[in-house]
Length: 68
Image (cartoon, rainbow, N blue to C red; front, side, top):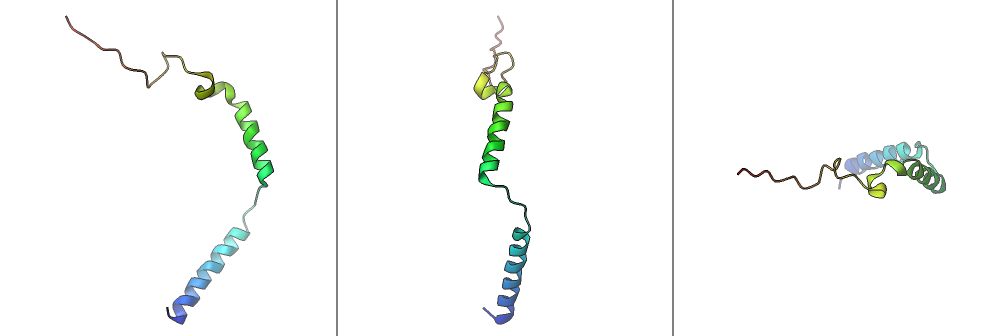
């Protein structure tokens, strides 16, 4: 690896580190509390928790149409 390509690579690394250093961070405990609150607020609309009526279920088996 030549010296010029090494310098270019290091400049890219420094640029990426500066970008990451400027990001706002959220504490894990705060993110977990927000996620828990969101889940509790939306639990009534979650079909995995409440179930889904068969008439609204897009994955139910289709009725077979037969002709006589």
